[in-house]
Length: 184
Image (cartoon, rainbow, N blue to C red; front, side, top):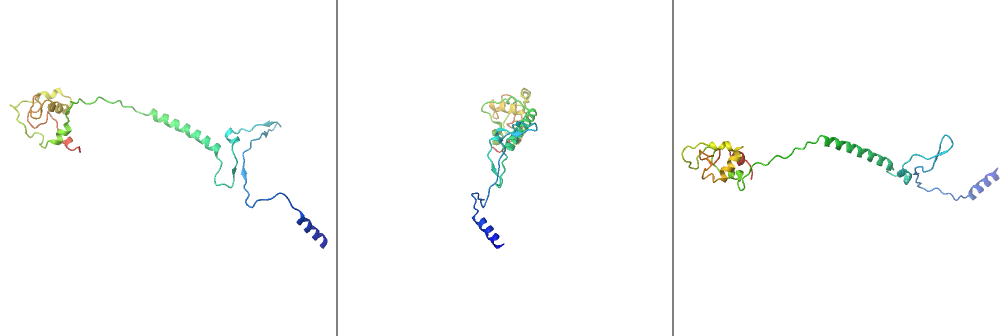
Protein backbone atom coordinates (compact mmCIF):
# COMPACT_ATOMS: atom_id res chain seq x y z
CA UNK A 1 0.00 0.00 0.00
CA UNK A 2 2.89 2.24 0.69
CA UNK A 3 4.16 1.73 -2.79
CA UNK A 4 0.88 2.87 -4.34
CA UNK A 5 0.82 5.97 -2.18
CA UNK A 6 4.42 6.80 -3.09
CA UNK A 7 3.69 6.30 -6.77
CA UNK A 8 0.59 8.52 -6.55
CA UNK A 9 2.55 11.30 -4.88
CA UNK A 10 5.31 10.97 -7.45
CA UNK A 11 2.89 11.11 -10.33
CA UNK A 12 1.12 14.15 -8.91
CA UNK A 13 4.44 15.89 -8.29
CA UNK A 14 5.60 15.19 -11.84
CA UNK A 15 2.31 16.44 -13.34
CA UNK A 16 2.79 20.02 -14.52
CA UNK A 17 0.35 21.99 -16.59
CA UNK A 18 0.79 25.01 -18.82
CA UNK A 19 -2.45 26.47 -17.46
CA UNK A 20 -1.98 28.92 -14.61
CA UNK A 21 -4.56 30.76 -12.57
CA UNK A 22 -3.70 34.36 -11.68
CA UNK A 23 -3.89 35.48 -8.08
CA UNK A 24 -6.36 38.28 -8.94
CA UNK A 25 -8.51 37.13 -11.90
CA UNK A 26 -10.60 39.68 -13.81
CA UNK A 27 -13.90 38.45 -15.19
CA UNK A 28 -15.34 40.33 -18.16
CA UNK A 29 -18.96 40.79 -19.19
CA UNK A 30 -18.94 40.81 -22.97
CA UNK A 31 -22.13 41.31 -24.97
CA UNK A 32 -22.94 38.55 -27.42
CA UNK A 33 -22.29 39.43 -31.04
CA UNK A 34 -22.86 36.04 -32.63
CA UNK A 35 -26.04 34.64 -33.97
CA UNK A 36 -28.52 32.85 -31.83
CA UNK A 37 -30.17 29.57 -32.85
CA UNK A 38 -33.88 29.93 -33.29
CA UNK A 39 -36.47 27.34 -32.35
CA UNK A 40 -36.73 26.27 -35.98
CA UNK A 41 -33.04 25.35 -36.03
CA UNK A 42 -31.93 28.23 -38.25
CA UNK A 43 -29.57 30.99 -37.18
CA UNK A 44 -31.23 34.20 -36.14
CA UNK A 45 -29.44 37.53 -35.68
CA UNK A 46 -30.06 39.01 -32.25
CA UNK A 47 -31.71 42.42 -31.98
CA UNK A 48 -28.76 44.38 -30.56
CA UNK A 49 -28.08 47.94 -31.60
CA UNK A 50 -24.80 48.72 -33.32
CA UNK A 51 -23.60 50.46 -30.15
CA UNK A 52 -24.05 47.24 -28.19
CA UNK A 53 -22.50 45.04 -30.90
CA UNK A 54 -19.39 47.26 -31.02
CA UNK A 55 -19.16 47.67 -27.25
CA UNK A 56 -16.08 46.57 -25.37
CA UNK A 57 -16.42 44.31 -22.38
CA UNK A 58 -16.30 45.86 -18.94
CA UNK A 59 -14.70 44.15 -15.97
CA UNK A 60 -17.50 42.96 -13.68
CA UNK A 61 -15.33 43.74 -10.67
CA UNK A 62 -15.04 47.39 -11.75
CA UNK A 63 -16.96 50.00 -9.79
CA UNK A 64 -18.90 51.09 -12.85
CA UNK A 65 -21.38 49.38 -15.13
CA UNK A 66 -21.44 49.45 -18.90
CA UNK A 67 -24.72 51.25 -19.44
CA UNK A 68 -23.90 52.59 -22.89
CA UNK A 69 -27.08 51.39 -24.53
CA UNK A 70 -29.25 52.41 -21.54
CA UNK A 71 -27.68 55.86 -21.46
CA UNK A 72 -28.29 56.45 -25.16
CA UNK A 73 -31.88 55.26 -24.91
CA UNK A 74 -32.43 57.35 -21.77
CA UNK A 75 -31.00 60.41 -23.52
CA UNK A 76 -33.47 59.90 -26.37
CA UNK A 77 -36.33 59.65 -23.87
CA UNK A 78 -35.12 62.73 -21.98
CA UNK A 79 -34.81 64.69 -25.23
CA UNK A 80 -38.37 63.76 -26.22
CA UNK A 81 -39.68 64.84 -22.81
CA UNK A 82 -37.71 68.10 -23.03
CA UNK A 83 -39.18 68.80 -26.49
CA UNK A 84 -42.70 68.19 -25.16
CA UNK A 85 -42.08 70.49 -22.17
CA UNK A 86 -40.69 73.19 -24.47
CA UNK A 87 -43.71 72.92 -26.75
CA UNK A 88 -46.03 73.19 -23.74
CA UNK A 89 -44.15 76.24 -22.45
CA UNK A 90 -44.26 77.87 -25.89
CA UNK A 91 -48.01 77.33 -26.06
CA UNK A 92 -48.40 79.26 -22.80
CA UNK A 93 -46.08 82.09 -23.88
CA UNK A 94 -47.75 85.47 -23.88
CA UNK A 95 -46.10 88.15 -25.98
CA UNK A 96 -46.99 91.66 -24.95
CA UNK A 97 -46.23 94.15 -27.70
CA UNK A 98 -44.53 97.29 -26.48
CA UNK A 99 -46.73 100.31 -26.25
CA UNK A 100 -45.74 103.73 -27.49
CA UNK A 101 -43.39 105.81 -25.47
CA UNK A 102 -44.87 108.76 -23.61
CA UNK A 103 -44.57 112.11 -25.30
CA UNK A 104 -41.28 113.62 -24.34
CA UNK A 105 -40.04 117.10 -24.91
CA UNK A 106 -36.30 116.95 -25.58
CA UNK A 107 -34.20 118.47 -22.84
CA UNK A 108 -36.94 118.43 -20.18
CA UNK A 109 -36.47 116.12 -17.19
CA UNK A 110 -39.36 116.43 -14.74
CA UNK A 111 -37.78 113.99 -12.26
CA UNK A 112 -34.64 116.14 -12.05
CA UNK A 113 -36.78 119.29 -11.73
CA UNK A 114 -38.73 117.71 -8.85
CA UNK A 115 -35.45 116.81 -7.10
CA UNK A 116 -34.19 120.39 -7.45
CA UNK A 117 -37.31 122.02 -5.97
CA UNK A 118 -38.15 122.15 -2.26
CA UNK A 119 -41.46 124.00 -2.08
CA UNK A 120 -44.74 122.23 -1.36
CA UNK A 121 -47.48 121.85 -3.95
CA UNK A 122 -49.64 124.94 -3.85
CA UNK A 123 -47.00 127.10 -2.14
CA UNK A 124 -46.53 130.21 -4.33
CA UNK A 125 -42.93 130.78 -5.33
CA UNK A 126 -43.39 132.58 -8.67
CA UNK A 127 -45.43 135.65 -9.37
CA UNK A 128 -48.39 135.18 -11.66
CA UNK A 129 -50.48 137.95 -13.19
CA UNK A 130 -54.16 138.16 -12.21
CA UNK A 131 -55.85 134.90 -11.04
CA UNK A 132 -55.56 133.18 -14.38
CA UNK A 133 -57.18 129.78 -14.39
CA UNK A 134 -55.35 126.70 -15.57
CA UNK A 135 -57.60 126.29 -18.59
CA UNK A 136 -54.84 124.82 -20.73
CA UNK A 137 -54.58 121.59 -18.68
CA UNK A 138 -57.19 119.80 -20.80
CA UNK A 139 -54.83 119.78 -23.78
CA UNK A 140 -52.53 117.27 -22.09
CA UNK A 141 -53.19 113.58 -21.48
CA UNK A 142 -51.36 113.43 -18.15
CA UNK A 143 -50.07 115.88 -15.56
CA UNK A 144 -46.53 114.75 -16.47
CA UNK A 145 -47.08 115.82 -20.09
CA UNK A 146 -48.40 119.18 -18.89
CA UNK A 147 -45.37 119.68 -16.61
CA UNK A 148 -42.96 118.87 -19.44
CA UNK A 149 -44.68 121.34 -21.77
CA UNK A 150 -44.75 123.96 -18.98
CA UNK A 151 -40.99 123.64 -18.38
CA UNK A 152 -40.21 123.60 -22.13
CA UNK A 153 -42.18 126.83 -22.62
CA UNK A 154 -40.08 128.77 -20.09
CA UNK A 155 -41.57 127.61 -16.80
CA UNK A 156 -41.45 127.88 -13.91
CA UNK A 157 -40.36 131.56 -14.18
CA UNK A 158 -42.97 132.34 -16.83
CA UNK A 159 -46.33 130.72 -17.46
CA UNK A 160 -46.99 131.46 -21.11
CA UNK A 161 -49.27 128.41 -21.47
CA UNK A 162 -51.46 129.21 -18.45
CA UNK A 163 -50.73 125.95 -16.64
CA UNK A 164 -49.52 127.26 -13.22
CA UNK A 165 -52.01 129.83 -11.91
CA UNK A 166 -50.94 129.48 -8.25
CA UNK A 167 -47.23 130.07 -9.00
CA UNK A 168 -45.89 126.98 -7.24
CA UNK A 169 -43.89 125.92 -10.34
CA UNK A 170 -46.01 122.83 -10.88
CA UNK A 171 -48.36 122.68 -13.88
CA UNK A 172 -51.98 121.58 -13.53
CA UNK A 173 -52.24 118.76 -10.96
CA UNK A 174 -48.62 117.62 -11.29
CA UNK A 175 -47.16 116.44 -7.96
CA UNK A 176 -43.36 116.34 -7.46
CA UNK A 177 -43.57 114.00 -4.42
CA UNK A 178 -43.17 110.66 -6.31
CA UNK A 179 -40.15 112.03 -8.16
CA UNK A 180 -38.60 113.43 -5.01
CA UNK A 181 -38.79 109.95 -3.46
CA UNK A 182 -36.63 108.54 -6.27
CA UNK A 183 -32.91 108.10 -5.66
CA UNK A 184 -31.29 109.76 -8.70
